[in-house]
Every structure is written in C-alpha cells, then in structure tokens.
Image 1 (spheres, rainbow, N blue to C red):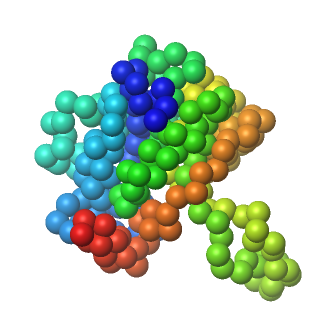
Image 2: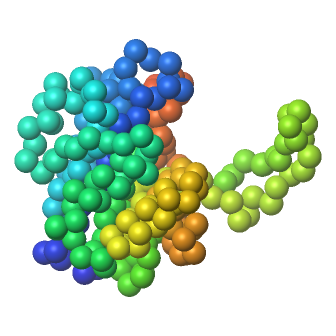
Length: 237
C-alpha cells in the first residue's frame, strides 16, 4: 500500500454537530437508529476498522445530550470536542485539536457522520491513489441521471453535459497543512463551503476524484433510513 499505511498512521475527523433539519425528526439525524444502532455508531465502528488508524475526532454540538449515552463513547481511540456554527468551523476545531500530532504534509480524513455505508476497500483505494499526491482527494461517483438546469420559475432551460459531473462523497482526505489553510481562508472570505474539497478548490488547489460506490449514501431525509438499513444488511452478508 502507501506510506500512509506506515507506523505514522492517520486521524479521521467526523463532524457530528449538525441538527439534521431536513430529517424532521425529534433528534439530530446521526442519532436515529438503523438496525438497532445509531447511524453515528455504525459510521464510527466501521472507521475503527481502518488499518493504521491513530484515532477519530468526533465533533459534537455544545448542547449534545445523546453522545455520552452511546457505548462507543468509552472507546479509547475516539476523542470528542465541541463543534462550531458551520461544518467548516467544526472541521477546523478538529484540526486545531490535532495540531500537536500533525505535520503539514500528514494526511487527515474527514467523513460525514451520517454516511454509514462506505466500504473499507474504497477507503483503502483512496489512500493508495493519493500516495504521492501533494493535495489530496475524495471519493465520488459519476452522475448517471440526465441533469437539467432550471430558471427561477422551475422551467427547464437546458440539459447539462453529465460526462464531467460527479457526486462528491466522503471520506475526503487531504494534507493537513493545505486543508487547514484552505478552510481558514474560506471562512475569512465568506466563501460557502459544502465539503472540504470546495475549500481547497476555492484556494486554487486541484483535489483528485477517486471513484467509489453508489451505495455510500448520506442519510439526509426520512426515505434514506430504510435504504441505508437494507444496504447495511446486504453488506454484512
């Protein structure tokens, strides 16, 4: 594999401070249940299986009342800190927490708390493909549906060429120095950041896209819950 799999190891940041408003549930979506465990537990248990993992930084809401009730709370490889107002604030808090452990060229992964169905083999391929890359990259899949561009009244204006369009997933993996610098610059400039790669793009870097699997879904809406349960059951077979 790569030098990333050496004794140096790596850290994963899991931003879990969101409230999941689109889910319309009585608790943040990462604490909803899939097959008798919370979404967050499924995600963390899978991340803990990654080889050469130094640890995971879970970033929770300052008023989170659920995290400390989970059995995985006691895991020695998991560090918990408070998040910020937006996702990029939370990821930066995680990077600041790891500052004493990391050099600028060390790798850091960021993974969505509500993305429990990723395959370890895909993450290992991401690591391998990025071995010599100076910036980093992300998992994603090519768009397969026909894509339409609309006007303000929901009228269809054109069909967009989908050959150059991909859907971004996580984990996303970057060199610590460029990730921290790009996130800080984006925050200072008020640039909207929807994932870590967008901060690097805004700073002029060119992350690599590594093809993953379509079943690496993010649980965002109520209809995603039964789909994620089915995917997890199929994967466990």
